[in-house]
Length: 614
Ligand code: GDP
Image 1: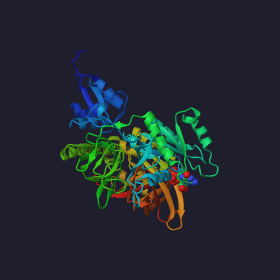
Image 2: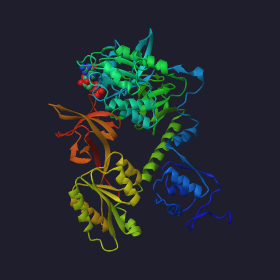
Image 3: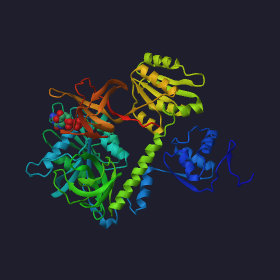
Image 4: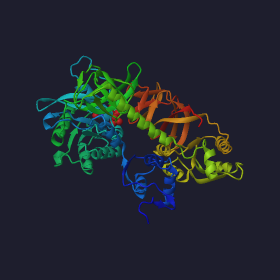
């Protein structure tokens, strides 16, 4: 056979490469691939089909499939991760993120950055409050501090003044959310364990998260003032998790404290510094353009976007041009946790920055660049990338709106039905099957079941090009994310006739959707308190998106809708009113007069947006 001939699979002629390298972003589709090599996407779809993979042209495919397809056509496919893409973007501006410039001699000691983690109610928040009150600006009149997401305290070790930075959002959820974005802000983890309670599930989780991040651990055995406190038992329990106290020959420092009564707080700070000195080499170059991570950000009515950043290397100055994630701007003003102006912030210093043109996300990296123009260009390139990714996800495979087109190809509408009990699921399926749609269209239910919509359901929908109907149930866990990414149409109903009408209308090509529900955020209830003044308050952790005051909410228990159309009537971060609280942060909220709240219930907020007609 002639070597120069284009390869063919199953009779499909293929574009043939010369072994050149094709770079594709992770999650690229066959259309993206075809664009790079000037081929027809349909031919790539066919080739994959013959290789036993059924994918559509616009669906995002795995690294393996991209590579397999590449090798069939004599291309070397290099899948580029978003991090690599970003590194390359910065390289085009001659910027390296994440490394100290210069050599050993340029490095100076920086304070450790600490996150406090542990089981709920073991005293994390109280400990952060106590340290802040006891140590921040001792002697300053009033000494009132604001919550900006982190604060620094001054203490002493062996007669020398030393600083420690505390991330002011307790818990490992925020810590892990930041890590998921590639931000490793924490040097040391303080694990708080209540001496009257012992090691609990979240204690173990916190230990696992700290160890996964390779952050040395200091154990604060809290509530030793309480009756029944048994610090020795905590030490003994923790040996099981590889944390052996120094006094038992291990290398983990345990400090018995009372966050409430302020007992042994100095010893805890000392233990943090000793642990840092013994196991970490915390140094950074202060003489370079600043880089670090955004740890909290919000839109302030008066001041515009406000972001608290942790400087990790370099020195941040008023007037600097900065990029934080896909936000950019110039540092107009910096303030610390006391509301005092800061002119330059050195490594490990948290400061609130005013002057960005939009709000970055917690965990976004920030860096200073030479010129406003460069900052803007980097931000715009990142925005474009995010937009492309979102658009790619939006190219739905099958949705009720573009059913017309889909039916022309397949003459079949495939459904997955999930409901809150088997009676309604059957009733819905029966009713749908009775819709008169004529002979040329077939309605098929590939799966039905009781319970929330799972990732498994979405995967099945992907595999069978199905639309998912949820009757009185919602998507669980990461199912919504997966559905969005894969472009799966998931529809929710609470009234059977509405479901039937919509499907019927779609089948008859009459569907005129006007509004679509847009999910804004999900939060899990971690705590419930009753207040005589405001009613039932839910202490929540925001799992995804953001929770906004005045948004509409529904309450889910075990994946089932318990209540709909509730208002988020009050929202607080610690003691302050908040307009929005983002993913990874804790908040307190009330749902109007609604009081049937239980631990682990999910609060989902949404808004109805007008849907552009395709
Ligand atoms: P978190 O969920 O870990 O942030 O826990 P909190 O800081 O909210 O504390 C939970 C409860 O324990 C609160 O009522 C605190 O006042 C109480 N608490 C915290 N530390 C101590 C302590 O050292 N001694 C006593 N007796 N109570 C404490």
